Image (cartoon, rainbow, N blue to C red):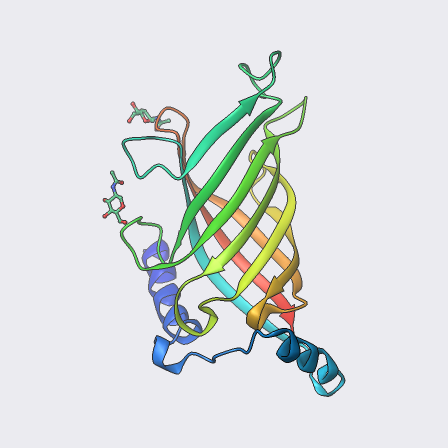
Length: 195
Ligand SMILES: *[C@@H]1O[C@H](CO)[C@@H](O)[C@H](O)[C@H]1NC(C)=O
Ligand SMILES: *[C@@H]1O[C@H](CO)[C@@H](O)[C@H](O)[C@H]1NC(C)=O
């Protein structure tokens, strides 16, 4: 029940945060426009944008594969904590936890298992938004993802389009994980400070 309510709130939140494309703000991207944007910064107030979506990471060829392992260390990488494995992703971001729910973007990037003690990764990705107000804008994230922790904070290190000069935090929370299925669904809450 609580989960259903949460999903409904998400849908409502999303229709606000991602209004129809017709309402999209076209952001000028020429070098001159970017320069003007920076010149006008002193008149701009920082704002806080909050987003909520689900990230689908599938290494399963039978289930909408979106992540591939491209390298692994000759030692250690085949047993927990799988130190030294590099994976490249183009993972869908959706409004709800179901893969069939409305798509709002992609997380294109990588993760590299980088702890000798626990399953923990250095993760880097560009969130590319493909829907609504933020269509065409991106957020860049880079940080540590210790998947055994309930909450993982990922720093937002920058952004483009409406997210120029973004800073902030993405909080990751595992919604579903099955090692055999090679599938993980992660709930993501974004709080971004930008202009
Ligand atoms: C693959 O993704 C589509 C939505 O893009 C979904 O309808 C379908 O059920 C998915 N297939 C599997 C096997 O998860
Ligand atoms: C993971 O998925 C496999 C294959 O569908 C299933 O047999 C297994 O029970 C699942 N494991 C857990 C912990 O849910």
